[in-house]
Length: 139
Ligand SMILES: [Zn+2]
Image (cartoon, rainbow, N blue to C red; front, side, top):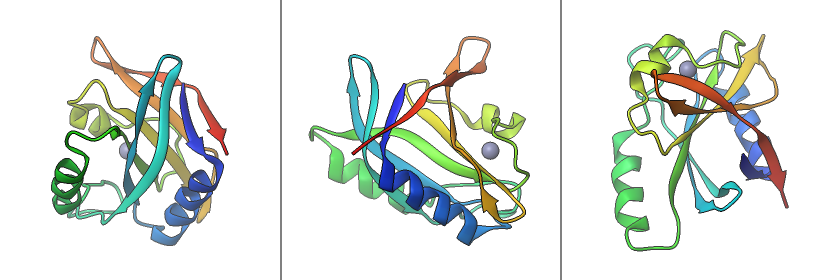
């Protein structure tokens, strides 16, 4: 299970629609709880991929900044979010190839004709493959 602040989930949907027809991306900061991942803050990122309509690459400067800021703190990067311009709420083969960190949750917001649809979440499993993770919200 991954729990996001309801307002953050709306902000991600808005970011996905704003970036359309390119993919949007973000890093998710939070904590690992007994019953799942709690996202406390989202960090929208610049998509620096060469082909942003079909791929995403989080700006490495954000990765470095968060690595520094969160070191030794109570929170960590717990997930990565991106939108899918093709409207599919499923990780692509490229996503699977890019998923190197098993502890990260992958959250995907599909966008169809410029309109964001419900987000879906996945976690890397042996195979490798992606297994669905339930998305819930908290206040
Ligand atoms: Zn993808």
